[in-house]
Image (tube, rainbow, N blue to C red; front, side, top):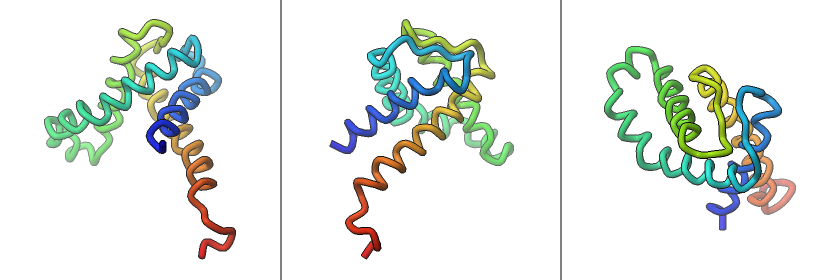
Length: 122
């Protein structure tokens, strides 16, 4: 159940993204669900391989290159999903960062509220 809620949260984060970044377009909630699913799959399967392959440059840049990997994956998904458009690399770079911040914030609100057993935390 938590996986489905996370998927929906990521789709909602994608729907909110164009309000913050006008260079990114998401047509509707269905497209947001598809993009969230593909991004989740790529982040689980492809991203670890890319991080491992680019480990030397990631170490040299003190981890900043991982942001480039995130941007490239974000831009890659936009290249083949109709209804999801990213204007260019820098839009993908900042869009991936803003998307992760929105997703984290909404997840914290939802799972923080669902996970707390009592007001005192005991």
